[in-house]
Image 1: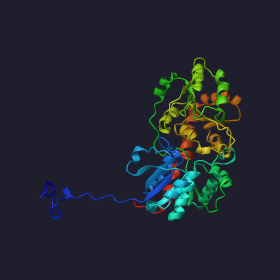
Image 2: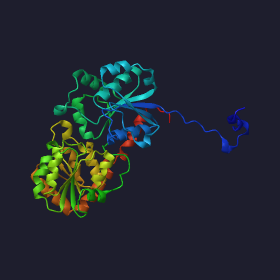
Image 3: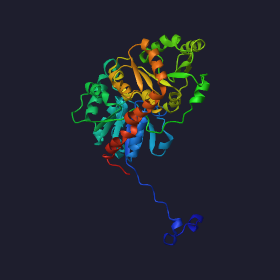
Image 4: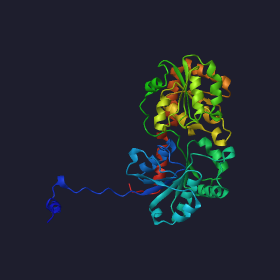
Length: 393
């Protein structure tokens, strides 16, 4: 008799304190095809994964690079690599393991095509996570056969998750969907609690005085996001108003040298750290006013609304915004938590207006987020929709 046998009580003599653990029930699984593997997933991806988990599913997440997954998903979400080619799809389409999936989900366009094809072959429903709408001048360069296949799959999807219903007309123009097709709204704001504020540390790191009024631009520093508007007003900013720019997407070195030179003469501070949206959130919280400019003429960029992650981030920290005028941003004026402008000459007066009414704008920004943006009001319907696929919870 081995030691292990000697020390294992017989079932009939076991006391309650020595009961064998019950193995955890196996959960049903979903499969998600992402366009890229963000570090960590963007709020749009994060919320969709969280919704599926809350519905009782585990997930396999496929991306061209191994997806970076949140720690809290450990044991329930597996990252895997996919090649978005017809050769890869044909090679793997008949794998028996796909039949273990309860549903497939994908992002436009190739992720939608893969989810739809595998769903059709294995008779499983599929879902579209529509974080981008490729149309007009933003149509992209995907081969026509992939576009046709993606559109066919999108029309067959059980439902679509869209960040803001203001994009519905653009989506229907790009992909004519059946009249009864269900579209669920899910703003591009994280469903996690806000990150702890580190405003003072960020200001100190960038040599911004604690009592300065900080106007922030997050994202690309180029004309399509109003970079030229900011530079035009820079010489006219009061000495206690600072322009803080975080561009974590990198630069070619020359841009950094130019902004370093600007910092010596004007109240502008730049950060080039490559950070996740979780870490960038600290920069949003350190601002007194946010800039949200979309000047691209692509249809989706003229209907940003709550698809704009930086807009949602500002509002959830009570930071009022100055935005380029478009119908999808009218709610900022309705809640009196932002100012819409048409040209750079209006930027200085907008900053001055918010600064002179900062407390009121700040309170309204919090209220706008609670009533109009907070994902917790939108997630339950999506979780219920996933549960309709059946799960092991």
